[in-house]
Image 1 (cartoon, rainbow, N blue to C red):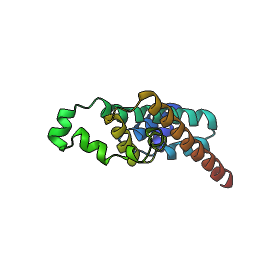
Image 2: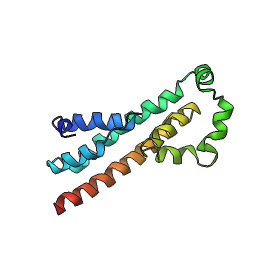
Image 3: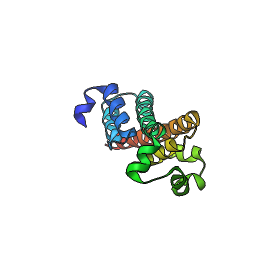
Image 4: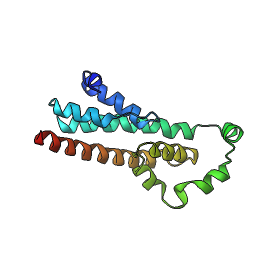
Length: 149
């Protein structure tokens, strides 16, 4: 992670982008390293949020633009079957998008929301809010830890 810190905001943006997509990556650690190195909190949170949000959109659009004939052929899942097994019966899509920052499960939720053709705008707004809160809390906790050290 320290090698990514050399690139500052750009390193954080790309690590957050990877973490937001379907690739597991620890952008939170890099955020803490950059805070420790004296970078200001607000720009770091915004850069990390933007990168993670755009990475999340890649997962969403993977589902949104997937061809159903390929899903049915290779995964043996029909649109009707997906609607039965998804969380949208229990939770509104906005709540799912709000909590899509959860590692691994969040990517699955975003791909599912894309497959179900959820609103691109609503998904984006709630996904942004959830990811912003995640990085804000992480940055504040990191700042507290840095002050103790």
